[in-house]
Image (cartoon, rainbow, N blue to C red):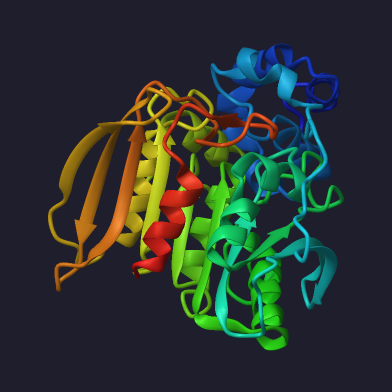
Length: 355
């Protein structure tokens, strides 16, 4: 294992797991130049992975505001209407196994319906994410299925999707194959329209959704990235830290219709990453139409719409003015939500339904 003169990896990991994030981040900042140079060949070391996993989405100057989130969970049980189902399931594939939850609305009648795969952020769970995004309520209203893969703590100590690992940015391997495998299982087993399968996520989950757009465009016909990063924005620990803090472009491209939400006050994932997500997917899109508005909760936003060659909206970028690192328009019953903002879940479904 390499030695970093200014950086005690085990101590930084201990501080992170204890919730002493400012102290851990201070150690990391002091050591970052040496770490970026010396650690790159050794990024498979468990200690280096644990550090990033422990810091998760709480890097950068926004640490102080997120310290209380570490052990935060859903504030109430997930409500399930009469006739609906909230099932615990497991997917097994060549890359391993993942638990997931599936919401089947009461109106499901074995006729083909859309499927949305929802990827939670660090430290979250399917129940927490379902509560916070209210996506199950929308599924009940509009009659579609929702799957919530659960990141295993054995794969990431803070339950972050490993969007920054090169091994988890490839088709046919790693976490992309597991998440796409869940969608394929449900298309094969239930009445799911394969032309209406979508994926969306928050933060690390948003970055993972971007990866799936680049690796499985045949499975996912639209992607939603909330407070996330482009596929290929990072390849290892140092580049992940840099991308989250200052943004990072990616040379990878895809043409899957994409909707992005990002707060311009996000100090955990730099909002310029939202621009990079759109740039990755807007091949051939015409110049944008820009419009502004104010949500019912009083949050100002700018909506940027990119049309394809036929004039149809192909991509959308919502910039949430004054918002931080949280799901816009979500419920306070879940974690990492900002109820003041426009309803990201409803707008994502409106976008998907018009593809």
